Length: 481
Image 1 (spheres, rainbow, N blue to C red):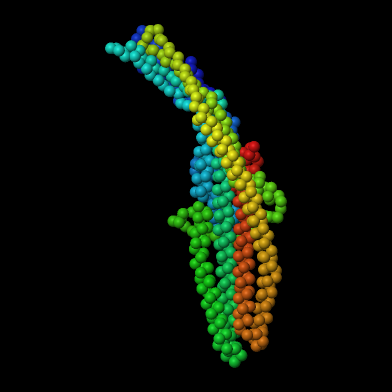
Image 2: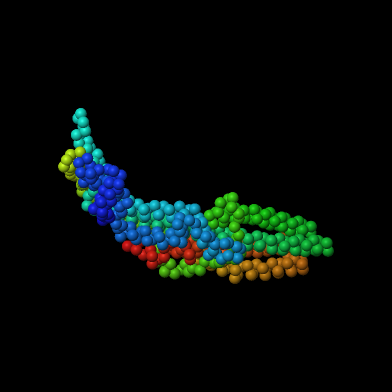
């Protein structure tokens, strides 16, 4: 699996020529001794390369595919210009390309890909030197030594690194989806906070009308001053609640800014001017199938299992000895004297090897248990979120089509009844408060429904938004053999 790509004869000639130009020659022949030439050739082998394994080539291909859009030449790409008229997709693209959490996960994955090369490579060769000295220097013996791990060890270690790299990719994808969810949630909360403010301001206008009606009724002797005071109390309550909502917009905007990956000292971003709802049918069995096929948490846990299995293979390889080969040459002797060297490790500590195998097997069982727990948790999460979405949808339908229209109609009847003297002001205010509560509940239900749908599509089903810097389903198919 490892090849030193060089031409020894050609390099030897180059070294001999370079040495001759500098006046370096052997005392007896005017040329360098062959042993010294060999040592100098070895010094030029620092640029040697190994041959990548199949899983290493695949990992680098995947990394390059993501790098082109996410960090070309390790530089942040040009970010989209955001305005209040920009669609949610532009805000998502900005957040995913600008988020430091996504960037950190990406470089963790990139580092794990480089580790595959490290694990499948031979140890660095060693330049050795030995000399026998009595009253004079009797021998001068430079040499070269290379260690060779036992057969299959490098491949097994590279397999572990490759599976761990796959897990790092799915961790990166999880961060991408979490970032997209955070941005969507922040957008929805800001939008519906503005909706609640709009409703409260409309309510303040309505309470102002009711106060004027109460004053007019009191002036003609049809009402009492207490009605005016009740209207003022309700108006003051709603006004204070509105002030609290306006103040709560600051932390909501800070969360939105953070979701875009912006620091506190950067200008505040524009807020989307329109709501884009999540198109998703949570009742479909297909969604659960997609969740088990695409959820990055499950894929990362499955990669842990495969890495643990590869670790077992590495543990068994510890029973195979490692080898070392070398050659030394006495450049002082004439003719030159060569001393070949060979070594082999003795894996005699059977209890140590058995413990390593047992540890690797325990790690696999632990990884399998985590995968099983993850599958169970995903099923529960899907069931809970799907139920929450259905429940919210039913409540939203009730509020929009039944309760709010009837509450508005009831308020008009109560106002007419108060003017005619058939209903007291207390019932009129109670009717107004009921309408306000229904309208606020409708806003809260819409917010919650969009958040649940976003969570289902992104965090549970693992479906990335358009333009996300991740591998497509077709590109990532080989990551889950």
